[in-house]
Image (cartoon, rainbow, N blue to C red):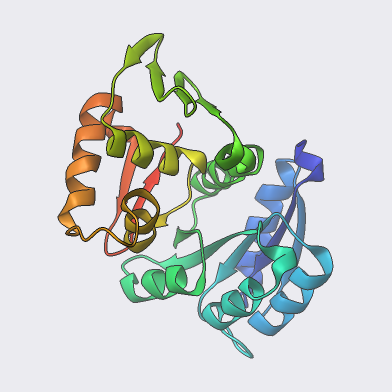
Length: 229
C-alpha cells in the first residue's frame, strides 16, 4: 500500500501538538485527519475508517481510553491500529490503554523523527496483516515456514523446539503488535495447560539468544512484541 493511500487519524485537544504531528506526517505523504476529543474521534473513525489512530489519553468530552473502547466495539475498525500518546512515566495510562484495546503507545514530548519512525514501524503491520494465515512469514533476513516448522536466519537454518517456534511465529505474525501475556499463554500453550508466567520469560530469553536480543521487546506488565528495524 502506497503512503498516499494510508489514512491516519490524529486525536489531541492541544492545537500545537495537532499541528506539529499533522505537518510531519503529511510531509511523509500520509493522509492525515484530525479530531480534538474522544467523542469526535469515535465519529470520525467510524466515517473515515483510518488505518492508524494516534490518540492522546487525557482529553475533554471523552478521554482516549473510553474512545478506544468504543472504537474497538466497531467490527469495521478491527484492523485499525491504535496507539496512544502518553507522558513519560505514565505507566497507568499505558496499561489502561492496552486493556482498552490499544496496540502501542508513543511517549511525549514528541520528537518528529522518532514519531515518523514509530509510525512507519506501526504501519508495517498493514502489509504483514495476513501473515497469520500464511504458511511462510518473511521479515528482513528471517524466514518462518510454518508448514515445515523451519526457521532460516541469514540463510542459515535454525532448529527450535515446538513452543519456541510457535511463540516466535505468533509474535512475528504482527510485527510491532504488543501481545499480552494472557493471549500468548492461550495461543501458544492453550487454555487447558497450566503453566507459570515465568514460562513465557524463559522462552523469550531463549529466542533472544537464537534470533537476536533486539528482535524482542518487553512491555513491562503487559507482554512482548517483535521489533523490526
